[in-house]
Image (cartoon, rainbow, N blue to C red; front, side):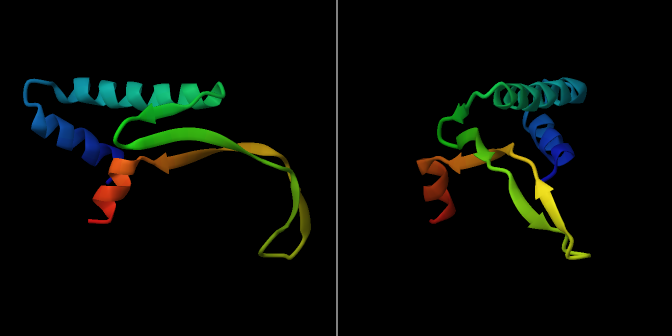
Length: 92
């Protein structure tokens, strides 16, 4: 599912909300998750899962096209851990 499909699905299930209002809600939702993660926080949605970040150390990598050795800087990457209810629903 892509973002526009999500917006349309929510708008269809909530006919009292205008499409632009649903878009604003979805945008705010994703922006807040990104803001919390960028500040080093964690976002937990009970029954769904938890978003956090993990540190990746710097390393030596290879350009797959040329085989050239390149240095990859240390960075933080997003991580999602599904909740118990999500895992149960996926394995029914």
